[in-house]
Image (cartoon, rainbow over all chains, first blue to last red; front, side):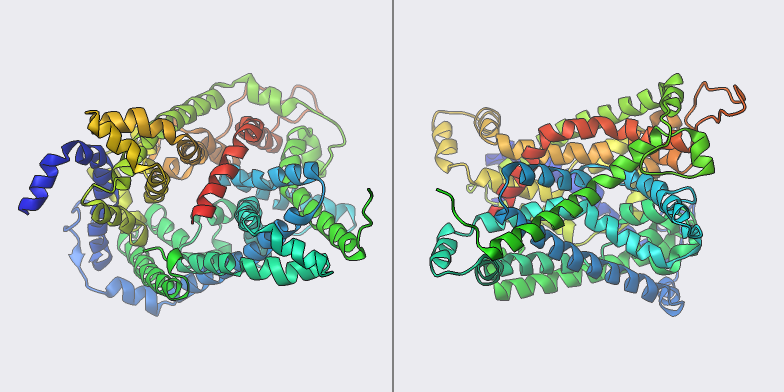
Length: 303
Length: 295
Protein backbone atom coordinates (compact mmCIF):
# COMPACT_ATOMS: atom_id res chain seq x y z
CA UNK A 1 0.00 0.00 0.00
CA UNK A 2 2.85 2.35 0.87
CA UNK A 3 4.43 1.63 -2.49
CA UNK A 4 1.18 2.45 -4.25
CA UNK A 5 0.82 5.82 -2.52
CA UNK A 6 4.43 6.67 -3.29
CA UNK A 7 3.80 5.79 -6.92
CA UNK A 8 0.61 7.86 -6.92
CA UNK A 9 2.45 10.93 -5.68
CA UNK A 10 5.39 10.45 -8.01
CA UNK A 11 3.25 9.98 -11.13
CA UNK A 12 0.29 12.10 -10.13
CA UNK A 13 -0.01 13.70 -13.58
CA UNK A 14 -0.14 10.30 -15.31
CA UNK A 15 -2.75 9.08 -12.82
CA UNK A 16 -4.78 12.24 -13.38
CA UNK A 17 -4.62 11.70 -17.13
CA UNK A 18 -6.03 8.19 -16.95
CA UNK A 19 -8.50 8.95 -14.15
CA UNK A 20 -11.41 10.03 -16.43
CA UNK A 21 -11.18 6.75 -18.36
CA UNK A 22 -11.06 4.69 -15.16
CA UNK A 23 -14.00 6.61 -13.73
CA UNK A 24 -15.93 5.97 -16.93
CA UNK A 25 -15.45 2.21 -16.75
CA UNK A 26 -16.23 2.12 -13.03
CA UNK A 27 -19.51 3.98 -13.57
CA UNK A 28 -20.69 2.46 -16.84
CA UNK A 29 -19.25 -1.06 -16.61
CA UNK A 30 -18.41 -2.06 -13.05
CA UNK A 31 -21.33 -0.45 -11.20
CA UNK A 32 -23.90 -2.13 -13.52
CA UNK A 33 -22.29 -5.47 -12.66
CA UNK A 34 -23.73 -5.00 -9.16
CA UNK A 35 -27.10 -4.67 -10.86
CA UNK A 36 -27.12 -8.33 -11.89
CA UNK A 37 -28.70 -8.77 -8.45
CA UNK A 38 -32.00 -7.86 -10.17
CA UNK A 39 -31.86 -11.30 -11.77
CA UNK A 40 -32.46 -12.86 -8.37
CA UNK A 41 -35.36 -10.64 -7.34
CA UNK A 42 -38.93 -9.89 -8.15
CA UNK A 43 -38.33 -6.32 -9.30
CA UNK A 44 -40.26 -3.53 -7.63
CA UNK A 45 -40.46 -0.24 -9.46
CA UNK A 46 -40.27 2.00 -6.43
CA UNK A 47 -37.94 -0.13 -4.32
CA UNK A 48 -34.59 0.33 -6.05
CA UNK A 49 -31.91 -2.34 -6.21
CA UNK A 50 -32.63 -4.01 -2.86
CA UNK A 51 -36.34 -3.16 -2.78
CA UNK A 52 -37.44 -6.22 -4.72
CA UNK A 53 -38.15 -9.53 -3.03
CA UNK A 54 -35.26 -12.01 -3.20
CA UNK A 55 -36.40 -15.11 -5.05
CA UNK A 56 -33.13 -16.93 -5.71
CA UNK A 57 -32.93 -18.75 -9.03
CA UNK A 58 -36.68 -18.60 -9.76
CA UNK A 59 -36.22 -16.36 -12.85
CA UNK A 60 -33.60 -18.69 -14.28
CA UNK A 61 -35.79 -21.72 -13.53
CA UNK A 62 -38.66 -20.14 -15.40
CA UNK A 63 -36.49 -19.24 -18.41
CA UNK A 64 -35.10 -22.75 -18.48
CA UNK A 65 -38.32 -24.70 -17.89
CA UNK A 66 -40.40 -22.66 -20.32
CA UNK A 67 -37.98 -23.46 -23.12
CA UNK A 68 -37.39 -19.75 -23.76
CA UNK A 69 -33.72 -19.98 -22.89
CA UNK A 70 -33.13 -22.94 -25.16
CA UNK A 71 -34.87 -21.28 -28.09
CA UNK A 72 -32.97 -18.01 -27.61
CA UNK A 73 -29.63 -19.78 -27.27
CA UNK A 74 -30.30 -21.95 -30.31
CA UNK A 75 -31.27 -18.96 -32.44
CA UNK A 76 -28.37 -16.80 -31.30
CA UNK A 77 -25.78 -19.52 -31.86
CA UNK A 78 -27.16 -20.77 -35.19
CA UNK A 79 -27.45 -17.28 -36.66
CA UNK A 80 -23.91 -16.48 -35.57
CA UNK A 81 -22.56 -19.70 -37.07
CA UNK A 82 -24.28 -18.89 -40.37
CA UNK A 83 -22.91 -15.33 -40.24
CA UNK A 84 -19.37 -16.47 -39.47
CA UNK A 85 -19.16 -19.18 -42.13
CA UNK A 86 -20.80 -17.33 -45.01
CA UNK A 87 -19.13 -13.98 -44.27
CA UNK A 88 -15.63 -15.36 -43.93
CA UNK A 89 -15.79 -17.50 -47.04
CA UNK A 90 -17.15 -14.67 -49.20
CA UNK A 91 -14.69 -12.14 -47.78
CA UNK A 92 -11.81 -14.53 -48.37
CA UNK A 93 -12.95 -15.21 -51.94
CA UNK A 94 -13.30 -11.50 -52.68
CA UNK A 95 -9.87 -10.76 -51.25
CA UNK A 96 -8.22 -13.53 -53.29
CA UNK A 97 -9.85 -12.36 -56.53
CA UNK A 98 -9.20 -8.68 -55.86
CA UNK A 99 -5.55 -9.39 -55.16
CA UNK A 100 -5.02 -11.25 -58.43
CA UNK A 101 -7.33 -9.61 -60.96
CA UNK A 102 -5.86 -7.08 -63.36
CA UNK A 103 -7.49 -3.66 -63.69
CA UNK A 104 -6.70 -1.09 -61.05
CA UNK A 105 -9.80 1.04 -61.64
CA UNK A 106 -12.13 -1.95 -61.45
CA UNK A 107 -10.59 -3.15 -58.21
CA UNK A 108 -10.60 0.26 -56.58
CA UNK A 109 -14.17 1.11 -57.44
CA UNK A 110 -15.66 -2.29 -56.58
CA UNK A 111 -13.80 -2.34 -53.27
CA UNK A 112 -15.14 1.13 -52.44
CA UNK A 113 -18.71 0.13 -53.23
CA UNK A 114 -18.44 -3.08 -51.20
CA UNK A 115 -17.25 -1.05 -48.22
CA UNK A 116 -20.17 1.39 -48.47
CA UNK A 117 -22.74 -0.71 -46.51
CA UNK A 118 -20.41 -0.69 -43.51
CA UNK A 119 -20.88 3.08 -43.23
CA UNK A 120 -24.65 3.34 -43.20
CA UNK A 121 -26.84 2.94 -40.16
CA UNK A 122 -28.96 -0.10 -39.44
CA UNK A 123 -32.00 2.16 -39.68
CA UNK A 124 -31.29 2.41 -43.39
CA UNK A 125 -31.19 -1.40 -43.54
CA UNK A 126 -34.70 -1.21 -42.08
CA UNK A 127 -35.65 1.14 -44.92
CA UNK A 128 -34.22 -1.33 -47.46
CA UNK A 129 -36.24 -4.15 -45.97
CA UNK A 130 -39.40 -2.04 -46.13
CA UNK A 131 -38.67 -1.08 -49.74
CA UNK A 132 -37.98 -4.67 -50.80
CA UNK A 133 -40.32 -6.87 -48.78
CA UNK A 134 -43.39 -4.88 -47.76
CA UNK A 135 -46.64 -5.58 -49.58
CA UNK A 136 -45.86 -2.81 -52.04
CA UNK A 137 -42.19 -3.79 -52.08
CA UNK A 138 -39.98 -4.36 -55.08
CA UNK A 139 -40.04 -8.14 -54.68
CA UNK A 140 -43.83 -8.19 -54.91
CA UNK A 141 -43.79 -5.78 -57.84
CA UNK A 142 -41.48 -8.15 -59.69
CA UNK A 143 -43.58 -11.20 -58.70
CA UNK A 144 -46.81 -9.59 -59.96
CA UNK A 145 -45.26 -8.39 -63.19
CA UNK A 146 -44.09 -11.95 -63.87
CA UNK A 147 -47.62 -13.19 -63.30
CA UNK A 148 -47.13 -14.70 -59.83
CA UNK A 149 -49.25 -14.09 -56.74
CA UNK A 150 -47.84 -11.45 -54.39
CA UNK A 151 -46.25 -12.92 -51.25
CA UNK A 152 -46.98 -11.54 -47.79
CA UNK A 153 -43.60 -11.69 -46.09
CA UNK A 154 -44.98 -10.58 -42.76
CA UNK A 155 -47.14 -13.69 -42.46
CA UNK A 156 -44.32 -16.19 -43.03
CA UNK A 157 -41.29 -16.90 -40.87
CA UNK A 158 -39.22 -18.82 -43.41
CA UNK A 159 -37.81 -15.98 -45.57
CA UNK A 160 -36.65 -13.82 -42.66
CA UNK A 161 -33.79 -16.10 -41.67
CA UNK A 162 -32.29 -15.61 -45.12
CA UNK A 163 -33.02 -11.89 -45.14
CA UNK A 164 -31.23 -11.44 -41.81
CA UNK A 165 -28.22 -13.47 -42.91
CA UNK A 166 -28.13 -11.63 -46.24
CA UNK A 167 -28.01 -8.19 -44.66
CA UNK A 168 -25.43 -9.23 -42.09
CA UNK A 169 -23.13 -10.52 -44.82
CA UNK A 170 -23.94 -7.49 -46.95
CA UNK A 171 -22.90 -5.06 -44.24
CA UNK A 172 -19.59 -6.73 -43.35
CA UNK A 173 -18.36 -7.79 -46.80
CA UNK A 174 -16.12 -4.81 -47.53
CA UNK A 175 -14.67 -4.66 -44.04
CA UNK A 176 -13.68 -8.32 -43.93
CA UNK A 177 -12.33 -8.20 -47.46
CA UNK A 178 -9.95 -5.43 -46.42
CA UNK A 179 -8.69 -7.51 -43.49
CA UNK A 180 -8.05 -10.54 -45.71
CA UNK A 181 -6.50 -8.36 -48.43
CA UNK A 182 -4.03 -6.99 -45.88
CA UNK A 183 -3.09 -10.55 -44.94
CA UNK A 184 -2.62 -11.47 -48.63
CA UNK A 185 -0.49 -8.38 -49.25
CA UNK A 186 1.90 -9.48 -46.51
CA UNK A 187 2.67 -12.69 -48.43
CA UNK A 188 6.02 -12.30 -50.15
CA UNK A 189 5.93 -12.07 -53.98
CA UNK A 190 8.85 -14.48 -54.17
CA UNK A 191 6.66 -17.54 -53.54
CA UNK A 192 4.43 -16.68 -56.48
CA UNK A 193 7.37 -15.82 -58.74
CA UNK A 194 9.09 -19.11 -57.96
CA UNK A 195 5.90 -21.07 -58.54
CA UNK A 196 5.34 -19.28 -61.86
CA UNK A 197 8.79 -20.32 -63.05
CA UNK A 198 7.94 -23.89 -62.09
CA UNK A 199 4.89 -23.60 -64.36
CA UNK A 200 2.15 -23.50 -61.73
CA UNK A 201 -1.00 -21.83 -63.05
CA UNK A 202 -3.02 -19.32 -61.07
CA UNK A 203 -5.38 -21.89 -59.53
CA UNK A 204 -2.48 -24.01 -58.35
CA UNK A 205 -0.70 -20.99 -56.90
CA UNK A 206 -3.80 -19.92 -54.98
CA UNK A 207 -4.46 -23.47 -53.83
CA UNK A 208 -0.89 -24.15 -52.72
CA UNK A 209 0.49 -20.72 -51.74
CA UNK A 210 -2.16 -18.07 -50.96
CA UNK A 211 -4.72 -20.25 -49.19
CA UNK A 212 -2.31 -22.20 -46.95
CA UNK A 213 -0.64 -18.95 -45.89
CA UNK A 214 -4.04 -17.45 -45.06
CA UNK A 215 -5.07 -20.36 -42.86
CA UNK A 216 -3.69 -18.81 -39.63
CA UNK A 217 -5.59 -15.54 -40.25
CA UNK A 218 -8.72 -17.46 -41.21
CA UNK A 219 -8.63 -19.67 -38.11
CA UNK A 220 -7.84 -16.74 -35.85
CA UNK A 221 -10.76 -14.69 -37.17
CA UNK A 222 -13.11 -17.68 -36.88
CA UNK A 223 -11.97 -18.42 -33.34
CA UNK A 224 -12.38 -14.81 -32.28
CA UNK A 225 -15.89 -14.76 -33.74
CA UNK A 226 -16.70 -18.04 -31.98
CA UNK A 227 -15.80 -16.34 -28.70
CA UNK A 228 -18.66 -13.94 -29.33
CA UNK A 229 -21.15 -16.52 -30.54
CA UNK A 230 -23.62 -15.79 -27.73
CA UNK A 231 -23.59 -12.08 -28.46
CA UNK A 232 -26.30 -11.05 -30.85
CA UNK A 233 -26.37 -8.06 -33.14
CA UNK A 234 -29.37 -6.23 -31.73
CA UNK A 235 -29.40 -3.46 -34.38
CA UNK A 236 -29.67 -5.92 -37.24
CA UNK A 237 -32.46 -8.07 -35.78
CA UNK A 238 -34.45 -5.19 -34.38
CA UNK A 239 -34.35 -3.08 -37.53
CA UNK A 240 -35.37 -6.01 -39.71
CA UNK A 241 -37.92 -7.74 -37.47
CA UNK A 242 -38.94 -5.00 -35.05
CA UNK A 243 -41.74 -5.93 -32.69
CA UNK A 244 -43.38 -8.38 -35.08
CA UNK A 245 -44.39 -11.13 -32.64
CA UNK A 246 -45.38 -13.49 -35.46
CA UNK A 247 -41.74 -13.95 -36.36
CA UNK A 248 -40.19 -14.37 -32.90
CA UNK A 249 -39.98 -18.12 -32.92
CA UNK A 250 -37.25 -18.16 -35.52
CA UNK A 251 -35.82 -14.66 -35.14
CA UNK A 252 -35.69 -13.94 -31.43
CA UNK A 253 -32.17 -13.79 -30.02
CA UNK A 254 -31.01 -13.17 -26.45
CA UNK A 255 -30.43 -9.47 -27.10
CA UNK A 256 -33.88 -8.82 -28.53
CA UNK A 257 -35.46 -10.76 -25.67
CA UNK A 258 -33.59 -8.71 -23.07
CA UNK A 259 -34.57 -5.51 -24.84
CA UNK A 260 -38.23 -6.48 -24.92
CA UNK A 261 -38.15 -7.46 -21.25
CA UNK A 262 -36.99 -3.92 -20.54
CA UNK A 263 -38.98 -1.83 -23.01
CA UNK A 264 -42.13 -3.81 -23.75
CA UNK A 265 -42.90 -6.31 -20.98
CA UNK A 266 -41.21 -4.44 -18.10
CA UNK A 267 -40.02 -7.79 -16.79
CA UNK A 268 -36.79 -6.51 -15.23
CA UNK A 269 -35.91 -9.65 -13.27
CA UNK A 270 -36.38 -12.00 -16.20
CA UNK A 271 -34.52 -9.75 -18.64
CA UNK A 272 -31.58 -9.30 -16.28
CA UNK A 273 -31.46 -13.06 -15.77
CA UNK A 274 -31.28 -13.69 -19.53
CA UNK A 275 -28.60 -11.00 -19.83
CA UNK A 276 -26.55 -12.50 -16.99
CA UNK A 277 -26.80 -15.94 -18.56
CA UNK A 278 -25.47 -14.47 -21.83
CA UNK A 279 -22.64 -12.62 -20.07
CA UNK A 280 -21.53 -15.60 -18.00
CA UNK A 281 -21.50 -18.13 -20.81
CA UNK A 282 -19.95 -15.56 -23.14
CA UNK A 283 -17.19 -15.10 -20.58
CA UNK A 284 -16.56 -18.85 -20.35
CA UNK A 285 -16.48 -19.07 -24.17
CA UNK A 286 -13.91 -16.28 -24.53
CA UNK A 287 -11.67 -17.84 -21.87
CA UNK A 288 -11.94 -21.15 -23.74
CA UNK A 289 -11.20 -19.59 -27.12
CA UNK A 290 -8.27 -17.67 -25.70
CA UNK A 291 -6.91 -20.87 -24.18
CA UNK A 292 -7.09 -22.57 -27.58
CA UNK A 293 -5.40 -19.65 -29.37
CA UNK A 294 -2.67 -19.65 -26.72
CA UNK A 295 -2.01 -23.31 -27.46
CA UNK A 296 -2.01 -22.86 -31.23
CA UNK A 297 -0.40 -19.48 -31.71
CA UNK A 298 0.68 -17.71 -28.57
CA UNK A 299 1.30 -14.32 -30.21
CA UNK A 300 -2.34 -13.90 -31.14
CA UNK A 301 -3.82 -14.68 -27.71
CA UNK A 302 -6.08 -11.94 -26.41
CA UNK A 303 -4.58 -12.02 -22.93
CA UNK B 1 6.28 -7.19 -75.39
CA UNK B 2 2.94 -8.86 -75.29
CA UNK B 3 2.65 -11.77 -72.91
CA UNK B 4 0.23 -14.47 -73.94
CA UNK B 5 -2.19 -15.16 -71.09
CA UNK B 6 -2.51 -18.69 -69.85
CA UNK B 7 -5.89 -20.30 -70.28
CA UNK B 8 -6.17 -20.83 -66.54
CA UNK B 9 -5.61 -17.12 -65.99
CA UNK B 10 -8.36 -16.22 -68.43
CA UNK B 11 -10.79 -18.57 -66.69
CA UNK B 12 -9.77 -17.17 -63.32
CA UNK B 13 -10.27 -13.59 -64.47
CA UNK B 14 -13.71 -14.31 -65.90
CA UNK B 15 -14.87 -15.98 -62.67
CA UNK B 16 -13.35 -13.14 -60.66
CA UNK B 17 -14.88 -10.31 -62.68
CA UNK B 18 -18.31 -11.95 -62.69
CA UNK B 19 -18.31 -12.73 -58.95
CA UNK B 20 -16.99 -9.32 -57.89
CA UNK B 21 -19.37 -7.52 -60.23
CA UNK B 22 -22.39 -9.43 -58.92
CA UNK B 23 -21.44 -8.79 -55.29
CA UNK B 24 -20.79 -5.11 -56.00
CA UNK B 25 -24.18 -4.75 -57.67
CA UNK B 26 -25.84 -6.46 -54.70
CA UNK B 27 -24.12 -3.97 -52.40
CA UNK B 28 -25.33 -1.06 -54.50
CA UNK B 29 -28.83 -2.26 -55.40
CA UNK B 30 -30.66 -1.39 -52.14
CA UNK B 31 -29.34 2.18 -52.34
CA UNK B 32 -30.55 2.54 -55.93
CA UNK B 33 -33.95 1.13 -55.01
CA UNK B 34 -34.40 3.67 -52.23
CA UNK B 35 -33.43 6.56 -54.48
CA UNK B 36 -35.72 5.32 -57.22
CA UNK B 37 -38.54 4.85 -54.72
CA UNK B 38 -38.19 8.40 -53.51
CA UNK B 39 -38.67 9.74 -57.07
CA UNK B 40 -41.77 7.64 -57.78
CA UNK B 41 -45.24 9.23 -57.67
CA UNK B 42 -47.23 8.01 -54.66
CA UNK B 43 -50.13 6.88 -56.85
CA UNK B 44 -47.87 4.41 -58.61
CA UNK B 45 -46.75 2.86 -55.30
CA UNK B 46 -50.38 2.32 -54.37
CA UNK B 47 -51.37 0.78 -57.68
CA UNK B 48 -48.22 -1.14 -58.58
CA UNK B 49 -45.69 -1.00 -55.75
CA UNK B 50 -42.02 -0.04 -55.66
CA UNK B 51 -39.93 -0.84 -58.69
CA UNK B 52 -36.35 -0.48 -59.84
CA UNK B 53 -37.11 2.23 -62.38
CA UNK B 54 -40.16 4.46 -61.88
CA UNK B 55 -42.51 4.78 -64.84
CA UNK B 56 -42.92 8.47 -64.23
CA UNK B 57 -40.57 10.71 -62.38
CA UNK B 58 -41.85 12.80 -59.49
CA UNK B 59 -40.37 15.25 -57.01
CA UNK B 60 -43.48 15.26 -54.81
CA UNK B 61 -41.83 13.39 -51.93
CA UNK B 62 -38.93 15.84 -51.74
CA UNK B 63 -41.20 18.83 -52.16
CA UNK B 64 -43.28 17.53 -49.28
CA UNK B 65 -40.24 16.77 -47.13
CA UNK B 66 -38.84 20.26 -47.63
CA UNK B 67 -42.18 22.03 -47.34
CA UNK B 68 -41.63 21.95 -43.59
CA UNK B 69 -38.01 21.00 -43.07
CA UNK B 70 -37.75 21.90 -39.38
CA UNK B 71 -37.86 18.27 -38.17
CA UNK B 72 -35.09 17.19 -40.52
CA UNK B 73 -32.93 20.22 -39.72
CA UNK B 74 -33.42 19.61 -35.99
CA UNK B 75 -32.38 15.99 -36.47
CA UNK B 76 -29.26 17.10 -38.32
CA UNK B 77 -28.47 19.64 -35.60
CA UNK B 78 -28.74 17.07 -32.81
CA UNK B 79 -26.71 14.50 -34.72
CA UNK B 80 -23.96 16.95 -35.66
CA UNK B 81 -23.80 18.20 -32.08
CA UNK B 82 -23.48 14.77 -30.45
CA UNK B 83 -21.05 13.57 -33.14
CA UNK B 84 -18.71 16.56 -32.78
CA UNK B 85 -18.79 16.75 -28.98
CA UNK B 86 -18.72 12.98 -28.43
CA UNK B 87 -15.85 12.41 -30.87
CA UNK B 88 -13.76 15.32 -29.58
CA UNK B 89 -14.12 14.46 -25.90
CA UNK B 90 -13.90 10.71 -26.53
CA UNK B 91 -10.75 11.05 -28.62
CA UNK B 92 -9.13 13.28 -25.99
CA UNK B 93 -9.83 10.84 -23.14
CA UNK B 94 -8.96 7.78 -25.25
CA UNK B 95 -5.62 9.20 -26.33
CA UNK B 96 -4.71 10.28 -22.79
CA UNK B 97 -5.52 6.83 -21.42
CA UNK B 98 -3.65 5.21 -24.31
CA UNK B 99 -0.65 7.44 -23.64
CA UNK B 100 -0.49 6.52 -19.94
CA UNK B 101 -0.91 2.79 -20.63
CA UNK B 102 1.76 2.85 -23.35
CA UNK B 103 4.37 4.26 -20.97
CA UNK B 104 6.77 1.46 -20.04
CA UNK B 105 7.92 3.35 -16.92
CA UNK B 106 4.36 3.49 -15.57
CA UNK B 107 4.28 0.82 -12.89
CA UNK B 108 0.58 -0.13 -12.87
CA UNK B 109 0.03 -0.15 -16.63
CA UNK B 110 -0.66 -3.89 -16.85
CA UNK B 111 -3.14 -3.89 -13.97
CA UNK B 112 -4.96 -0.83 -15.28
CA UNK B 113 -4.98 -2.22 -18.84
CA UNK B 114 -6.63 -5.35 -17.54
CA UNK B 115 -9.09 -3.32 -15.46
CA UNK B 116 -10.23 -1.67 -18.71
CA UNK B 117 -10.00 -4.80 -20.84
CA UNK B 118 -12.07 -6.87 -18.44
CA UNK B 119 -15.16 -4.80 -19.31
CA UNK B 120 -15.13 -6.41 -22.76
CA UNK B 121 -15.18 -9.89 -21.23
CA UNK B 122 -18.00 -9.53 -18.75
CA UNK B 123 -20.82 -7.05 -18.37
CA UNK B 124 -23.86 -6.59 -16.20
CA UNK B 125 -26.04 -6.51 -19.29
CA UNK B 126 -28.41 -3.99 -20.80
CA UNK B 127 -30.94 -3.68 -18.00
CA UNK B 128 -28.73 -2.76 -15.01
CA UNK B 129 -26.92 -0.32 -17.30
CA UNK B 130 -30.21 1.22 -18.37
CA UNK B 131 -31.49 1.54 -14.80
CA UNK B 132 -28.22 3.15 -13.71
CA UNK B 133 -28.41 5.78 -16.45
CA UNK B 134 -32.09 6.62 -16.12
CA UNK B 135 -32.73 6.18 -12.39
CA UNK B 136 -29.44 6.89 -10.69
CA UNK B 137 -27.67 9.26 -13.08
CA UNK B 138 -30.97 10.79 -14.12
CA UNK B 139 -29.91 11.35 -17.73
CA UNK B 140 -33.24 10.51 -19.35
CA UNK B 141 -34.15 12.73 -22.31
CA UNK B 142 -30.91 14.72 -22.19
CA UNK B 143 -28.20 15.00 -24.82
CA UNK B 144 -25.78 13.76 -22.16
CA UNK B 145 -27.47 10.35 -22.37
CA UNK B 146 -26.64 10.23 -26.09
CA UNK B 147 -23.02 11.25 -25.61
CA UNK B 148 -21.60 10.10 -22.26
CA UNK B 149 -22.42 6.35 -22.12
CA UNK B 150 -20.81 5.87 -25.55
CA UNK B 151 -17.80 8.06 -24.90
CA UNK B 152 -15.15 5.39 -24.42
CA UNK B 153 -14.58 1.86 -25.60
CA UNK B 154 -12.01 -0.50 -24.19
CA UNK B 155 -11.07 -1.62 -27.71
CA UNK B 156 -10.26 1.91 -28.80
CA UNK B 157 -8.07 2.51 -25.76
CA UNK B 158 -6.17 -0.72 -26.39
CA UNK B 159 -5.78 0.17 -30.08
CA UNK B 160 -4.50 3.61 -29.10
CA UNK B 161 -2.11 2.11 -26.56
CA UNK B 162 -0.65 -0.26 -29.15
CA UNK B 163 -0.36 2.57 -31.62
CA UNK B 164 1.53 4.80 -29.19
CA UNK B 165 3.77 1.92 -28.09
CA UNK B 166 5.37 2.07 -31.54
CA UNK B 167 6.62 5.61 -30.88
CA UNK B 168 10.25 5.36 -29.69
CA UNK B 169 10.79 5.72 -25.92
CA UNK B 170 13.74 8.01 -26.50
CA UNK B 171 11.37 10.84 -27.43
CA UNK B 172 9.68 10.75 -24.02
CA UNK B 173 12.99 10.29 -22.21
CA UNK B 174 14.79 13.18 -23.85
CA UNK B 175 11.80 15.48 -23.27
CA UNK B 176 11.80 14.52 -19.59
CA UNK B 177 15.49 15.37 -19.31
CA UNK B 178 14.67 18.76 -20.82
CA UNK B 179 12.19 19.21 -17.95
CA UNK B 180 8.91 18.81 -19.87
CA UNK B 181 5.87 17.74 -17.82
CA UNK B 182 3.89 14.60 -18.68
CA UNK B 183 0.92 16.47 -20.09
CA UNK B 184 3.18 18.63 -22.24
CA UNK B 185 4.89 15.51 -23.59
CA UNK B 186 1.51 14.04 -24.46
CA UNK B 187 0.15 17.21 -26.04
CA UNK B 188 3.21 18.52 -27.86
CA UNK B 189 5.10 15.36 -28.78
CA UNK B 190 2.97 12.22 -28.73
CA UNK B 191 -0.30 13.56 -30.20
CA UNK B 192 1.34 15.05 -33.33
CA UNK B 193 3.05 11.70 -33.94
CA UNK B 194 -0.20 9.75 -33.55
CA UNK B 195 -2.03 11.31 -36.51
CA UNK B 196 -3.05 8.11 -38.36
CA UNK B 197 -4.17 6.39 -35.15
CA UNK B 198 -6.19 9.39 -34.05
CA UNK B 199 -7.76 9.73 -37.50
CA UNK B 200 -8.86 6.10 -37.65
CA UNK B 201 -10.19 5.87 -34.11
CA UNK B 202 -11.82 9.29 -34.41
CA UNK B 203 -13.59 8.24 -37.60
CA UNK B 204 -14.89 5.07 -35.96
CA UNK B 205 -16.18 7.11 -33.04
CA UNK B 206 -17.80 9.69 -35.32
CA UNK B 207 -19.44 6.94 -37.36
CA UNK B 208 -20.80 5.37 -34.19
CA UNK B 209 -22.35 8.63 -33.02
CA UNK B 210 -23.64 9.56 -36.45
CA UNK B 211 -25.39 6.24 -37.00
CA UNK B 212 -26.71 5.80 -33.49
CA UNK B 213 -30.40 5.29 -33.00
CA UNK B 214 -30.32 2.79 -30.13
CA UNK B 215 -29.38 5.23 -27.35
CA UNK B 216 -32.03 7.65 -28.53
CA UNK B 217 -34.53 4.81 -28.59
CA UNK B 218 -33.73 4.02 -24.96
CA UNK B 219 -33.29 7.47 -23.50
CA UNK B 220 -34.93 10.19 -25.60
CA UNK B 221 -38.61 10.98 -25.26
CA UNK B 222 -39.14 14.49 -26.66
CA UNK B 223 -39.25 14.74 -30.42
CA UNK B 224 -37.08 17.87 -30.61
CA UNK B 225 -34.19 15.84 -29.15
CA UNK B 226 -34.32 13.09 -31.81
CA UNK B 227 -31.05 12.53 -33.64
CA UNK B 228 -31.32 12.04 -37.38
CA UNK B 229 -31.23 8.24 -37.55
CA UNK B 230 -33.79 7.87 -34.79
CA UNK B 231 -36.08 10.36 -36.55
CA UNK B 232 -35.73 8.27 -39.69
CA UNK B 233 -36.51 5.11 -37.72
CA UNK B 234 -39.65 6.70 -36.29
CA UNK B 235 -40.75 7.88 -39.73
CA UNK B 236 -40.18 4.42 -41.23
CA UNK B 237 -42.07 2.75 -38.41
CA UNK B 238 -44.87 5.26 -39.00
CA UNK B 239 -44.54 6.12 -35.32
CA UNK B 240 -43.68 9.67 -36.23
CA UNK B 241 -45.08 11.47 -39.22
CA UNK B 242 -42.83 13.74 -41.16
CA UNK B 243 -44.73 17.01 -40.93
CA UNK B 244 -45.42 18.53 -44.32
CA UNK B 245 -47.40 21.46 -45.64
CA UNK B 246 -48.88 19.44 -48.47
CA UNK B 247 -52.66 19.57 -48.55
CA UNK B 248 -54.55 16.56 -49.84
CA UNK B 249 -57.30 16.71 -52.49
CA UNK B 250 -55.48 19.18 -54.72
CA UNK B 251 -56.55 17.13 -57.69
CA UNK B 252 -58.21 13.74 -57.98
CA UNK B 253 -55.05 12.04 -59.25
CA UNK B 254 -52.78 13.53 -56.62
CA UNK B 255 -51.90 11.42 -53.59
CA UNK B 256 -49.98 13.15 -50.79
CA UNK B 257 -46.70 11.24 -50.49
CA UNK B 258 -46.55 8.76 -47.60
CA UNK B 259 -44.58 5.67 -48.62
CA UNK B 260 -42.42 7.66 -51.01
CA UNK B 261 -41.90 10.25 -48.28
CA UNK B 262 -40.27 7.53 -46.16
CA UNK B 263 -37.88 6.79 -49.01
CA UNK B 264 -37.11 10.49 -49.45
CA UNK B 265 -36.43 10.79 -45.73
CA UNK B 266 -34.01 7.86 -45.97
CA UNK B 267 -32.21 9.56 -48.88
CA UNK B 268 -32.05 12.92 -47.09
CA UNK B 269 -30.71 11.31 -43.91
CA UNK B 270 -28.09 9.22 -45.71
CA UNK B 271 -27.14 11.25 -48.78
CA UNK B 272 -24.51 13.50 -47.16
CA UNK B 273 -22.69 10.49 -45.69
CA UNK B 274 -22.57 8.78 -49.07
CA UNK B 275 -21.11 11.94 -50.59
CA UNK B 276 -18.56 12.27 -47.79
CA UNK B 277 -17.71 8.58 -48.01
CA UNK B 278 -15.10 8.68 -50.81
CA UNK B 279 -13.05 11.19 -48.81
CA UNK B 280 -13.00 9.33 -45.51
CA UNK B 281 -12.97 5.77 -46.81
CA UNK B 282 -9.21 5.60 -47.32
CA UNK B 283 -8.59 6.52 -43.66
CA UNK B 284 -10.65 3.52 -42.62
CA UNK B 285 -8.87 1.20 -45.00
CA UNK B 286 -5.47 2.53 -43.93
CA UNK B 287 -6.28 2.25 -40.23
CA UNK B 288 -7.73 -1.23 -40.60
CA UNK B 289 -4.68 -2.36 -42.50
CA UNK B 290 -2.32 -1.00 -39.85
CA UNK B 291 -4.40 -2.66 -37.12
CA UNK B 292 -4.58 -5.95 -38.98
CA UNK B 293 -0.89 -6.20 -39.71
CA UNK B 294 0.01 -5.36 -36.15
CA UNK B 295 -2.49 -7.88 -34.84
